[in-house]
Amino acid sequence: MTKLLMLTLIFVLVMLGVLGLAALLRPDPARQRLQALGAGGVQPRAPVGERLMRLIADLTRPISRLSMPEEGFEKSSIKLRFVHAGIRNPIAASAFFGLKTLLTLGLPLLGFALLAMSGEAPRGNSMMLLLLLLAAMGYYGPNLVLTRLVTLRQREIFEAFPDALDLMTVCMEAGLGTEAAMLRVADDMQLKSAALADEMRLVNLELRAGADRERALRNLAIRTGVEEVDSFVTMIGQAERFGTSIAASLRIHAEMLRTRRRQRAEEAAAKIALKLLFPLIFCIFPSLMVVLMGPAMIQIYRVLLPTMSGSN
Image (cartoon, rainbow, N blue to C red; front, side):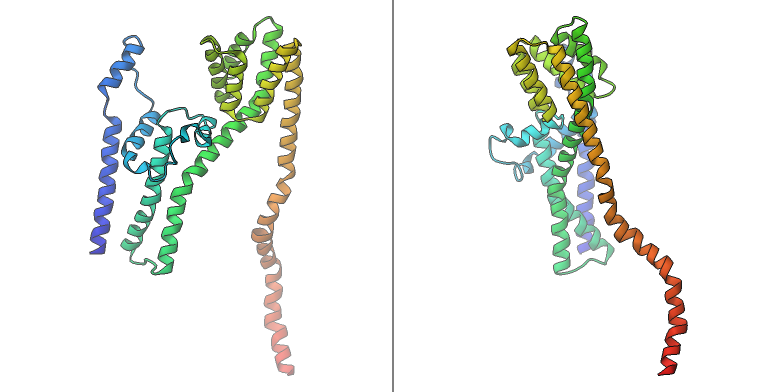
């Protein structure tokens, strides 16, 4: 009876996956018409990632509220983490919390089904501990993935930012303005750092829309969450306020950022010895001890122990 229930549960999960895939591939006539009107008659297809995110949000909307914070989280640090990760889709938060709830409830059920079908399922406290571990993995796993995405994006921006400032300095010394220089740097940095190029294009779009330069640059610092970008925004504001040369300030700031980048690389290299200490102690040294001391211990066991027992 238990195996029949498990097979039924797996069948339901597979059918939900098939239906979700069908909903993903099914075209939306209204959306296609709106996109065609915006694109001058051409009907572009939404990216697969966006369609998948929308599908997850639609399927998990009834259960997403189980893990979603209170009202007003859109203006909290949770929403800011999505911006730092480069996720600007308005349905990203709903899809995230829906997927989080689905994994929290689905992983224990799937694990229990697989263990029940294998016939070697643990019982009692062991089963409860395993299910709680799977639920914790489903609940905290999306948070770890989001944190990793934020870290990778911020590291990419930090490593490419000094080079972008060098290009911006050259453009401004050649006679371009701040907006034109940032747009040119965004085009040149597209291959090296797409994230930084997109952020600079957003700044240029805000300036074209009539936003104040200081506010647009401050939004750049908020979207990236990188300390070096925030110091760059502060430097630009001070240079404009006191009337100093922006190109000279950019050159000095770029040199400081390159020094900081080199120091971080040296710090990471200095930590390698400490990070290798634990693998050496717990993985490599025991193997070396077995290889080196193994023959000697065998000889002691074969020769010395019988001799000592005979003398007694």
